[in-house]
Length: 182
Image (tube, rainbow, N blue to C red; front, side, top):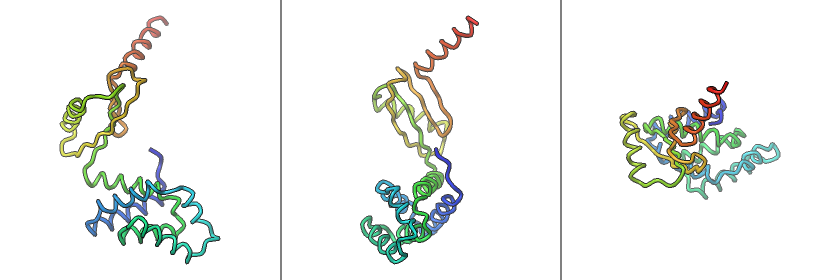
């Protein structure tokens, strides 16, 4: 995960606290997610240009807010970061806001990597095992297929990696053989 600037963290935290105060965290998260999916890095850099007047920026933000049907809070937030010429930081701001949202909602993201498509019951079994280790957490699973691991699976929970793939076992045997020869 890329490092988030202090400025982006401050904007995200301010928005998070305001959304929490207004009981609109889920809605704001959804709106920011939608905006992020349609956000162009070029737009952020173009609106940062000193050539564009504040009046034009206000019109552009109003059009964006109307197009995405944003709530007043989201609209005002985007207007603020555009006015402060920080729209180019939006991806970082969203990333930090989403981290705060997940923490508040007690969501634990888990990535499970298989060599080929698993059956749903296997995913559910793994999800149940993980929920036993992390009681009270809402487990969300991201499934990834990576043929390179040959067989078995890998589980990523935050910065922790559990690797019981065939690829890893072969590599371990290879390393043991090399050290036995030396």
